[in-house]
Amino acid sequence: MPSTRPDDFLNTVRTTAARPGQVIDVVVLTSDAGLLAALQSSAGSEHALWDVPSADAAVDHLVGGRCDVLIVDLGSLRGDVTTLLGRLQAQFPDLIFMATGRREQEGAIASLLSTGRIYRFLHKPISPGRAFQFLNAATRRYNELRDVQPIALQTVRIIARKRPYLGKAIAAGSGVLAAVVAFGLWWHSRDQGLPATLQTTHVGDTPIEDQVKSKLGSAQIAYLSGRLIDPRGDNALQYYRDVLTLDANNADAKAGVQKVVDTLEQRVIQALNDRNAPRVVTTWTALQRAAPNHPRLDALRTQLLALSRTTPKAPASVANNPRPPTGTSTAAPTSAGSDDSPAIRDTTVVSAGNSEAERLAAAAAERELAEAIARELAEQEAAAEKVADENDAETALAEAQGPSLAEQVAAVTSLRERGALIAPAGNNAFDNVMSLRERYPDAEEVRSEQQRLAFVLLDRARTALAAENIDEAATLIDRANTLIPGMQAVRTLQEQLSAAQEQRDFAKNVALAASLKRVREVPPVYPRDAQRAGTEGWVQVEFTIAPDGSTRDLHVRDSAPKQVFDKAALDSVSKWRFEPIRKNGAPVAQRAVLQVRFVLNN
Image (tube, rainbow, N blue to C red; front, side, top):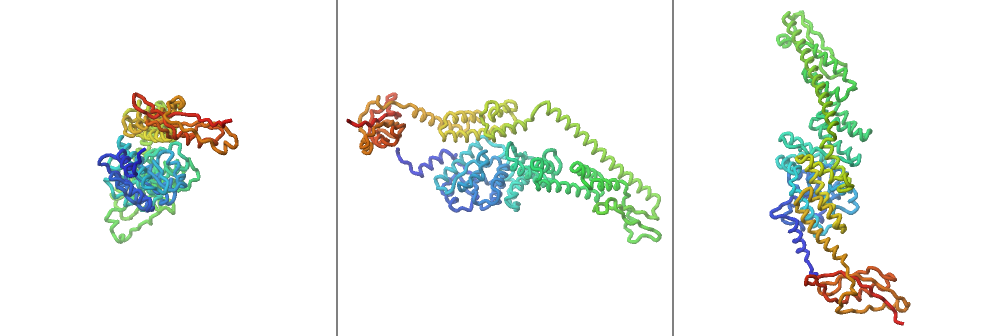
């Protein structure tokens, strides 16, 4: 077989993976100069390599839209690697994540690798050849993603390139990295009217610890964005309570619930101090919803009612007079609530010199304020009743219609993450997503899950081909092509599959060498030790007859006694020559088997 220089091999691979005019931003988070040098020497013109020293610097590239592939050196990260990478992946689901490190570090991210959230792991130390294969795999995955135009990745880039300064705000460290990035993306998507799809992460059957971390991150984002108790299902209080459902003793969740309640209480107090009747009612109702048993709820309600009975300040002609007129007296302010309340004080002023008109005006103002509060309370109660009625109607409709689309997609995601891709029949990710595609042909959630499943099937097909599981690989490739027809990755794997099938058929088609015409036959040399011991036996040798009639790829199928005559038989058959085997008039290779006997002459 002709030799191939490493440079020629790399050029061949580069041609098959990259596309004309392509430039892929590859961010490498490492402090290992050797790793960086290997990647730099292997990068082609299609790779723009960015060296960053920390996770914060990597996020600057992510948010700035200058990162298509992120390669993380596990030895350069501090803290909980799985949590950090998991949160980054949750916020940038279509970014290509790859990792490298020592063999013993691979176990730290085993869950991310097994579910495909990290695409490849490369053991250190790394040679330039292996580094190029690593980059080439990233290039191939990048092109697969681009072929199907992933919506989420496009959204990230639109957001990032319009707001490159968001990355500069990250100063809290890698522990809260993902939460800060997600909040920035949410805030921008709210202003620009873009779909904020990056906030949602399906937990499926992930471990409780991972679910807790994910919900705590979502709670922090909701709190920072002002979503304390609304909207339903996507607010800080709900996320914290979900954590307590999973882990009743979680200190962070308990502190988070208290933080939300304290913030709501401060809003009530501020509204009282501002004498804003509608705002008081709204904030007090929100606090009551969040904490029905709050110890200060009754005291705040008392202050709310006192506000409706409080006369506004005296007219400017009286209030602005630095000294009250002779014969007047001013009552000292009294607390409208508990002694320790920082809220509003009763500012009723009783002046002996007030005219009848002033008293009538004060009474009218008091009645107007009381009526405003009563109207606001009535509106709040009516709105609450309307929401309750709507919720009841939605619940009844949902029960009648069965699981929602989101729930059905989540079930498919769970099957995919558990590895139930095409089996068992009727309860696997492929069958279920095909059913959803038929019922919801225009649903973006279904298309997104369909794309992710296709990529997982292709990865599993590559593994099956490497393990020579040809039939399994063929089934997986066929299913991926059904989900997303015409992908370049599918065509490439189909070519590899055809070659593997030909090789399998060739290996199975074994001829009996004794029936083939031999041009040269070299007898074996009887091993001296076996001859002295009077040992006889046989060796069954399988080999390939090359198109020129020579023998190659020899191996021992079986022998008796074991290992006694194997070498002598292999040495002998390697020197045999056969008349070339022809098919359709052309010489071809042929697999053959020959049994060599070792018998002593009496």
